[in-house]
Length: 238
Ligand SMILES: [Zn+2]
Image 1 (tube, rainbow, N blue to C red):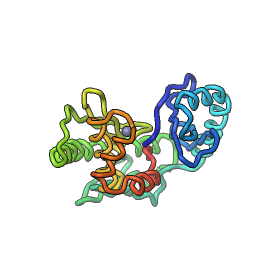
Image 2: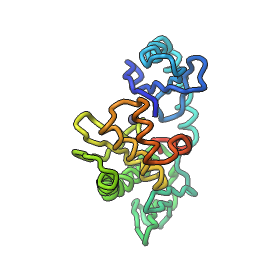
Image 3: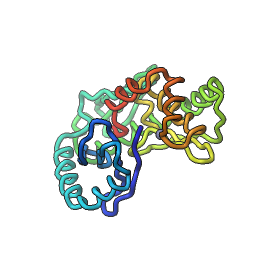
C-alpha cells in the first residue's frame, strides 16, 4: 500500500496515497474514514500533505456534511447481520426491559426490548461497542497465532504482535519488528487478512515500499496487485 499517514491539525489523520493513474491531486472523503489525498506517483508525500493543509477548511466543511448524511441513515437496523470471521451477529427482541445477548454456535443475537428504537444514537453506539468487542476477542485469539505461524513458514523474525482498533490502516510494522494488526481484519476473508499480515512481515526485511519490498511480497503472495485491488473493497471502519 503506497500511502503515508499525516496528522492534520483540526482534522486528525489524513492518508496521502500514491496512485499510478492519478494525474493531479484530489481529496476523497468517506464517512468515518480519514480523508484520503490521492497524488500522482512522482509527487512526494509532503506535497500531498501540503495540499491537505491548504484545503483544511474544505475538508472540515465537507466531512461535516457527510457525517450529517451518515447520521441520518443508521449503521445498524433490525435486519442487520454483521459477519465476522467466526461469528454472525444479529438483532433480536424480547419482552424484558433490558438489553441482553445470547450465543448459539457461531450466531450471536443482541436482544433489545420490543419497543426500543435501535436506530437512536445511544443504541447505535452500544451495538458498535458490542461488535468491536467480538472483533477484538476474535482478533486476540486468532491474529497473533496466525502471524507467528506465517512468520515461521516464510522465515521472518518478529518481536511482538499486538491487535488494535486502528482507524485508517490494516496493520503496521515498527523498526523493532513489532507488528500491529487491526481487529477489523476479522471482517475480511482469510486470504486477505493473510495478505495484510504478509505485507507487514515483509516490512521486517524492507522498511519502505521500494522495489525490493514489492518483489518479496509478490513472490510470497503471488499476486499483490489483484489482492490489493480486492482489499480496497473493504473499509477499516465498520
Ligand atoms: Zn506497508
